Length: 286
Image (cartoon, rainbow, N blue to C red; front, side, top):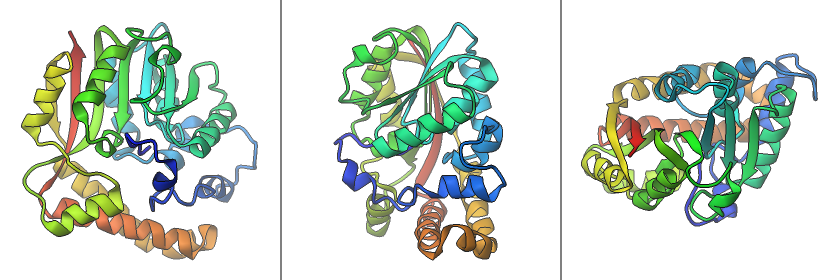
């Protein structure tokens, strides 16, 4: 889930992707699952996960971190909790889901309860840059892994963010991040769209991202290029959404549709412009 470094919750709530929070429950009901009824976390992940490539991305994180029932993983910007629940369901690890937006955090807690995963997934409200690290998990040096899916792009100060991640990880702990980066200089219109539609600015280049990761105390850094796969994904997502317009509008209303199609079109245009890149960054704390 998107997160910023300035703590301005009201600004974040205007993001077109998250201004209709009731659509999660509406979609659950549309699939024949009654309010309050238990939900399979893998079925729910088709509704409440906002990152790219679905559960295959979570499976890659599991392969990178190799968590088990004794492990502890921190999900930064956990949103509605989809990735945290799938990660814990796959590996039986204990996941702390940290989410900035209070209303999204509250909904995520309820969804985790309905998935019968409250013993493995603990939800916390807060901003990773501002909160007291002693209150997260068992405090500094306590996590075996950190994951974050399309959240770091909203935090311009990558060095401060990565240093905080290093602080939370045990020595040898693994950082797994999916993020945007600047492949080349953005046009003025792209800069405006990134700021206005995606709520990100000052994206790093590949070189500066790796340098910041090293400076924060990581090594064994892998910078996996995801641009082509993500361009295909966001294009297909937009096309399927347009095809299913009538069904979506009947369930969620015209306003929700218009907000999402605006966002989906903006992201497609940014990737097709060739200057926006996607990265899966995997690194180990020294």
